[in-house]
Figure 1 (cartoon, rainbow, N blue to C red):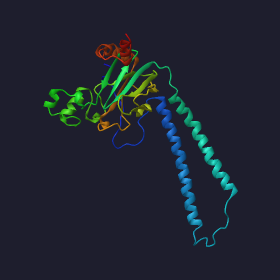
Figure 2 (figure 1 turned 90 degrees about the horizontal axis):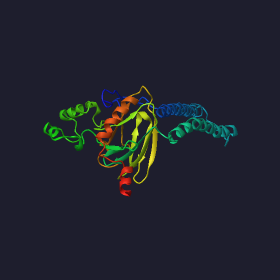
Figure 3 (figure 1 turned 120 degrees about the horizontal axis):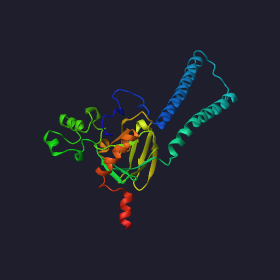
Figure 4 (figure 1 turned 30 degrees about the horizontal axis):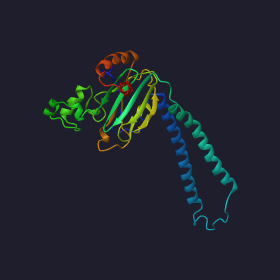
Length: 288
């Protein structure tokens, strides 16, 4: 039930510009920083173009036939050294706290391991003892013989594929975004994700959460986020590192639910995905 009747909140909308509505404090702070920097660079561009225009109009050969003979101006040289320094200090004073909030990983209430594969994602909940693979709806792994008989084709949106999407609770608009299984997380909790790759470099990202982390084979990296309470819904992302021919068919689906719905989902997920042992269990079995 945790995967039903959820509003789709974090998704791209055709024809619009700007960021997706933030669902975490990290995304809110990052977008605010972007707006601040946009204002600063806009002011700088207007000032510079204004100076260029003033020079063109005031110091052209017709208006000013006698060129100046000076070589420097001490005040101007001091100003164009100190003002950029002050601008960078202002930007740094706002950007460093945002960077630290992203990079300082908390202990976390929920831990999830993410592994990027060509071309799907694997997820493990090590504290719960299960894991699962997540494929684009339209990948051969998500289609049945009856779907092909109805006219479905791999990675092609047609009426038969729309029916497959509807079977999973999505519409045609979510084609290339929705997956057969989703990461389910509780809102209001710190989620820590350990990210790696099994073959080539991938990148796990959810724009509405303000997080993005490369999945590098042989290395473990971490990211964290906390979805604000009251912002339960479905959020989409995609692999953001070119990883091969099917890079475009490697989406990410996260479903943020209340704690009660998350607990109910866990109860069913432990049984449904019990046959997929996390790496930690595999290592323990190997040691035995």
